Length: 199
Image (cartoon, rainbow, N blue to C red; front, side, top):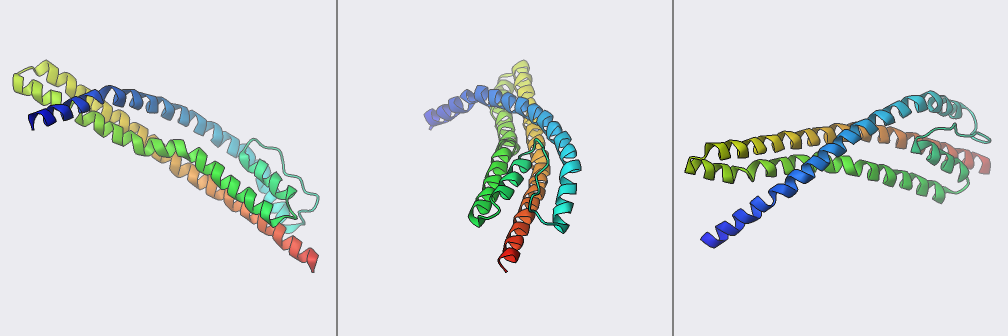
């Protein structure tokens, strides 16, 4: 039994360095994600000024001959694809499915951050507790204090990573839901026009 306990102890202490490295990597990723989020927000504000009038216009007039305004967001590309495949329901469905897949892929990283950050933070908290208790039992207060400092630091960093990932996920999911709603609306308008033309 003692051998198994020592084996578990060695495994857990050996994981400390990888946990810290991954936490630092995720922390840097979260900072980059915040910067990317600001860029996306500015791009969406610009897109709103051109895309909203287009949506309002096609709601009351025909889509025939209409061209999608220029923009940097993926939504503009998929709108163009929808209009290009106005006579093919299958291609329109494929375009909507591709958009959903791309948005899911974009959310993948920040979703991982929101889940993995707290998990690694907890691991970084629990792993140094063993050596800290050993230091306390042997009267080595300095060693215990050092291990406790590592434990609390990893907790804080892990929670920061998780919080950033969670907030960005919530906001971007609302953005993508709105974008998808607009694409489905345009696709339905195309279907309606096609049915009207057949009659």
